[in-house]
Amino acid sequence: MPDLRTEPSIAAGELGKLVSGLLRSICVIICMTLALAACRRPAPSSPLAPLGPDAKKFYGSTTPKSLFDPLFAPSCKPSPPGTAKKKGDDERRAESYQDDPTLHALTILADFSDHRFTGAAADRTNYRNAKLNDYQSHANAYWKEASYNQVDIAFTMPDRIVKMSGAFDDYFNRTFVAASLTTKGLTGKYPLALDGSASATIHVRDSHGRNKDVVIVPSGPFPNAAALALTFENLFKAAPGVPSPWVTCQASGDEIVCKLDDLETQEVLSSG
Image 1 (tube, rainbow, N blue to C red):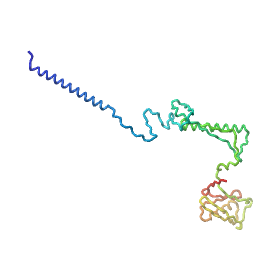
Image 2 (tube, rainbow, N blue to C red):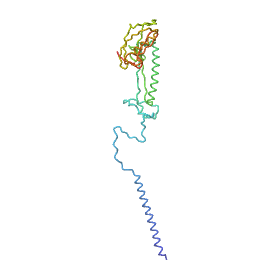
Image 3 (cartoon, helix red, strand yellow):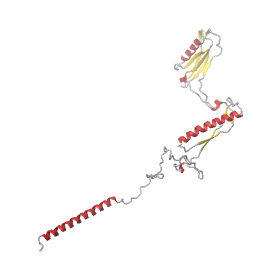
Image 4 (cartoon, helix red, strand yellow):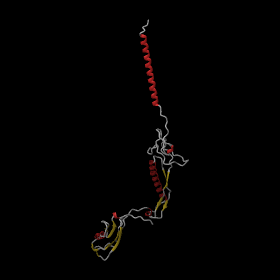
């Protein structure tokens, strides 16, 4: 006959195990539900307003647009419709980047009334070919490097020389030469004795707005041109309100050359 005292204890143990397993299952279900809820994507929100008419979206797969990337340098400007696209050396480049048109430059040979070309026709052609090759090679290499191989240049140089009617200095600024005055007629006159009866009035205008009339009245014995030049320069220095040096005087052989100091001169361009 079974022991009635052991039946309730067995039943209670089995019931405890059942309740414990049920609680564990409920906990697992709750944890999984929370985990799935955490992984769920949030509800889509309304898209942000664009920053402007030129705003763009960039994703990880977007082609680089860096202006300094030689493989993906964008074109300078689009070609007209129907223009054939140029093929680059690197096939990895997008074809839309290969549509920059070639630059065309016209170069004309010219000479001037004081610099006429005196060679034969063959000399002119050889000169023209050398210049054309020089311009084409150097300029084209520059444009290709500066544009990441996107832009090239083609020169046209007719095999003829345009004869300009004027001299070279009529079209281009010549090298600046300061104005000067040089005496004439003193060669072989030394030693020279002057009594002050001979004089000259020289009007001087400098770059600082000074306008001076300087009277040159040399007097005394002058053994050579250097002594006379020193007297001339001292007379210029004696003018009121002028710096030193202002007008400098030097011997040139037996003659005297007077000119403004370099700091007091300026080049005046005039057109006729």
